[in-house]
Length: 136
Image (cartoon, rainbow, N blue to C red; front, side, top):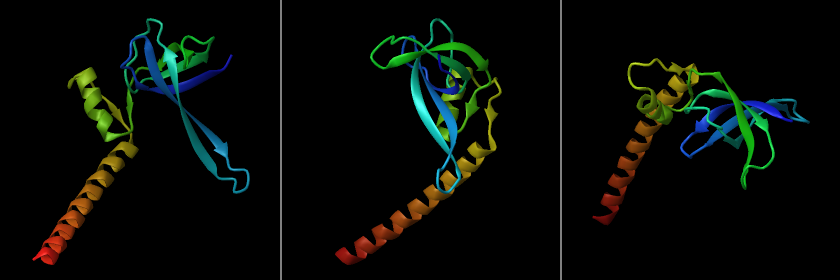
């Protein structure tokens, strides 16, 4: 039986959680380490899980059409947030008084997203000015 550790990406459906499992492989020619990620649907079997928790899943007989794993245990109850969009969802789930572990990548991601949005809005504004001048 295969066992994997992964992060809960979604826990919206009843008795099912989607777990993201990452693994490192080495490129055969260039020898660079690559990260491969796959999402598995796993049966919760009465275990309460929330988005961002690290869980251990095990392969089982097919439970449904595309659910072939079962959650064994919650390894780390502290949610890990990688994307800024998940932060709001985590505050909704945990409340404002709970502490959430945010990685450095998440902070960098938010700064990059803000800069990208600013660049995009200035580019769009410049395009609109050019289009208006052409129409006149």
